[in-house]
Image (cartoon, rainbow, N blue to C red; front, side):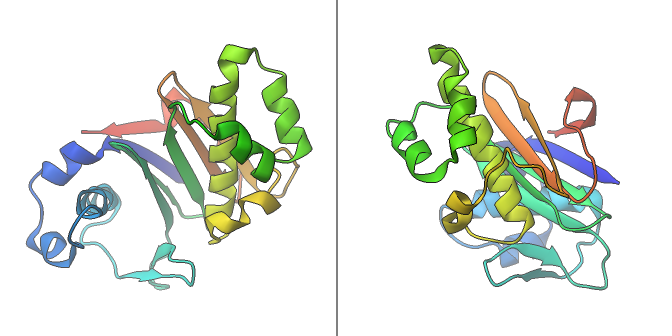
Length: 192
C-alpha cells in the first residue's frame, strides 16, 4: 500500500494543532514546514508513533511501526509518501526559473539525463530539468542519502526500485518505491 498526500504548508500549519506538535516544533523558518509535515502524518496515524532520524537526517517511525514515509516541500507545497512495503523517497519542486540550472545539470546529471533535456523543445527544457531533479532526489531520499550523492545517481537507469514522476505546469513530483507505484491524478490526495 502506498499513500501520497499533497498540501499547502501555510494552510496545514495554521490549522488547529495538538499541543504536543507546538511544544516539539522547531523555532524559526522551519517551524511551519515541520508542523505541516506532522499534520499530514497524523492523517495516517494518530497518535503519531515515535519518530527517529537516520544518520543523514531522514525521519522514520520507530521500528515497532511497520510504516515508512518521506516528506518533501518546496515553496508552500508539501508532499508526504507513506508505504507499508519498505523505504520510500519523494521529492516535490515548484517549477521555477533558476539562473544556474544548466550549470547544475552539467555538474550533476548523467549523459542520458542530458540527452533527455536536449530532446525537449527549448521552452520545455527547464521543466525537464525539474523532472530529472525530482527523480534523482526521490532516489537519494529513498536510500536515506544526502544531496551530495545526486551526481552518483542516473535516474534513467533501470533498477529494482520503481521511480515514477508527475508534473503539472507548476509542480514536479517524483517518488521512489520498492514496488511499482504509478503517479497520476487518481493516487494523489490533496489535503486542505
